[in-house]
Length: 208
Image 1 (tube, rainbow, N blue to C red):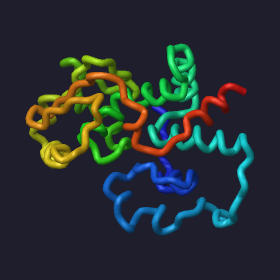
Image 2: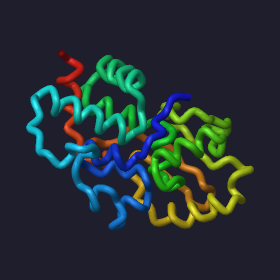
Image 3: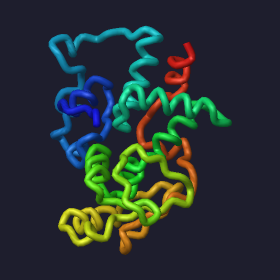
């Protein structure tokens, strides 16, 4: 399975925004965006005026890296969003938010989306009672996501259970900390997307 394996802090610096790819570290002074808030590389501190295309591309890359999606997969999601009724940009964000790894992170059962992806791949979660190890699995309203029985007793999930109890759960999800399971009850509202994105720029990029 293809995935990005280089230093993830470089991605935040390249996009000029915190993408919260390293969990708790992103909220401390050790965060790369606090220590070096400029693009990586020899010429990173030079200010560059972006063209219209450059702005659109950067916004697409920001969204792609935020959710940990590769290029072809992101393009497929856009086509899916474009076929649905409503605003394409908002449809795209709703699809990305419905990914299993994202929902696991939103429940507080992982410190970051990359960690959620890894936990899903290792088979620690079930969907409607069946084990699912595909991070890109798209959930629908009514689907129930739970920590697998064999994993509930692990020290890792006991620690995460304590953290998830204080997690701010978005309104399109319901979460039961005692059972370590949650339910998708709707679609993510635009205002609940946790990163400032101008999705209209992504739509303009793909519409050329």
